[in-house]
Amino acid sequence: VNDRERERGRGNQTKYIILTYKIRGRENMPSLFVDNLPQGFSSRDLRELFGNQRSIADAYVPRIQRSRSNGRFGFIEVQAWEEGERLMQQADGRRAGSRLIKVSWAKYPKRLGTQKKPWQLDGGVLKFNGALKDQPISHSHPGKSARVIKLEVVQENLAWLRRSLICCSETPRDIDALRRSINEAFQEQIVVRALGHFKFLLTMDSKETKDRLKVEGQGRLEQWFFSFSDWVESDVCQTRRIWLEIVGLPIQLWSECNIRSIAANWGDVVLVEKESSTLESL
Image (cartoon, rainbow, N blue to C red):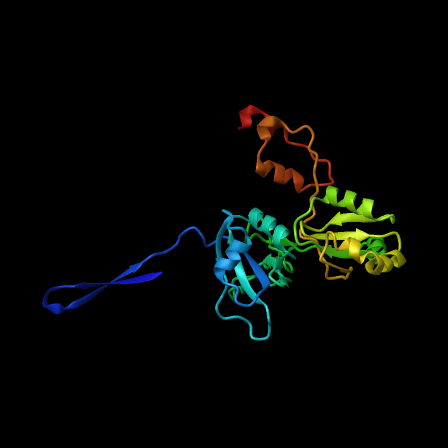
């Protein structure tokens, strides 16, 4: 922000003093990209949409928007990656006016010549310095290289996904309370899974049951959801929590850094060096 202050001296000579203010400490703050906002939506409206939470450092809706899109877009700057994940889970798919907004991590163009290509090797491990699709590289360590891994489609999942509905709610819902309500309202067996606070996956015992409930059960489904549609490949969940049980860790080794090191070896049996657990090594 530049502010120009005029000071008049002798002989009516005019001097200009340029005062420059720089906001420090915000260069590494992560940002969320909010899409499909209503026309006329302002930066203030965007902040109020997220409830003016303390974790939000800034909210901005650019004046210049895309010419080929009806919906506006904006950015939310958050204090930490964890706060961004929480806001994304809460707000993605919620309603703003007559529109359903989409919330994802913001992606910015990279400087040429400073990033390695995805196919370049570094010490025998394939590194990728850009974001993988719509996700940040590392929520805890922004800018850290991520190992590129190849995942396989679970064929068993496709069988029950084809008899599932993606359902969106206007308000966040508790998954256990929602399961009870749906089981009481329907005689059919329905498995309810959470894809976020606003998005849920309902799986029926057959594709025929799913197609029938989309029509005959529409009124009952509208008790909780404003939209429900068949599952498609582009549907994703914002987060998937897995709890790890760590047994035998000495109390003096409790720290976020140590827990992350252990969690990185999920599925393996690991041993802690004896020297690291003794007080003499601290």
